[in-house]
Figure 1 (spheres, rainbow, N blue to C red):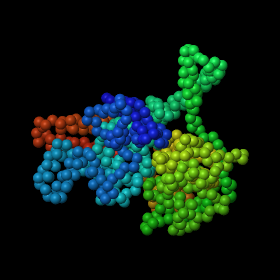
Figure 2: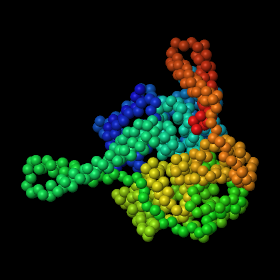
Figure 3: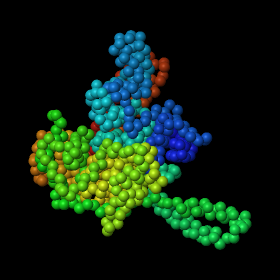
Length: 626
């Protein structure tokens, strides 16, 4: 069943054309990702599909399946800051939620007439279980205080609130714009498993390559104004794109040879040309255009000459950090070594950004001390980004820091060349900062950090708002970086490629020192078990455990767990099918009150059992799918 069809859709802002005459369709059950470079219109296309932006073109159209229920998760969701959590959820466009809201309002104001009207509407929509479902979903997403004001929520909590609203609305078709931004690793893994099992149809933009690998069955790439379609997940996309690029390179070389041949012919021709010759000249112009097309090179090949690091780099001695009674770090000791690559992971609020500020001495610990070597030059990329002057041109932002960056063997890389290597073409160098997209500004901020040529590089959530192409380039750059690298990121793929050592902040002041990649760590530990293991232990106890501890064997699913997992999948399918049947029966206006009441009770029981099955399914998925 086709849910959506776009035909010849175009969009531009002034002289900037984002996309032109693009066409594609989305069918029920599809899980499709859109991949493109920052600034090419990914978010705009999502807004167009969601109906928040108009379309251009005489023959353009967007057709939706009849009665299709759509939800749109924005990159930066907005709620009324004065609302509490429950009010924010009830402000949804969902008819069921609005009916419950009117009922609650009538109840508070003792308006019997309004209450009867609201009850009738709730009965029509069969929405009596909606309030319990709201609390249930919020609980799953770890939002427990329903009276908390929205303006006191963190970015991650706001994102989870928006996710909860979508899950409660139960749409047929879900549009996601960077769904993992601002979520911690534990919540990202939960969302990933939910979307894997969910029957939802998805169209999303994400830079999370594990999401693309494990959820998507198709990837659409917008590249230089053209759409390319790849069946399969991220691995399939990389393989098929590589073949496409190779074919393009071969065809380009053939075109260049033909161009040289035709150019030689053109030069030998007299000024007066026959009709046949003029036709060949016109074809020559087409060949010339194709021959001058560049195949984009996505590999960054240069080695930076980092500033020398002495024997003393950065030492943390019995460091502790607390705010009021909340302990973020307790009695932590560590000495950084040359060329070390450390990832810092933990739930939101565990103190990851605080830990980075302590390292750079931007924040003084409440106990202990930090010693920095004389040769250390910090480069600190922060979550909040740099306050770039919007009336400055891109090239001037970089030149204000340095005209060039030193490479090995005495070579230099100019500011212009570095901008080009990080996907700022020459045509964009004179553009004002105010004209850049959010992702482009973050990329420029990243360059301002790298241009200072640090030897101790700290990256706090560097992947937010960056496209996959930029991430690949950044990874290539960091592989050649010869210095200490410390990364905080929710991008598991990025971390696995660059980090071989982890500090795990569990949120109770404890820091676990783990040698290995993030994927290796998750194969051995669950977040719940890790918190319980470190709860109440001192730093010295943790360090002793690390020395004496032998790595536990990776837990494999037992036969009974595998059987239970399979049974749960079947039961969930049956429950969802029965739920659908009941909802369809409610459409029958001839139902008597007794039947309506009986079906409502059954629907509530099904919803409760469905929730239990889903929770247990997610628990078993950690074991069975690993």
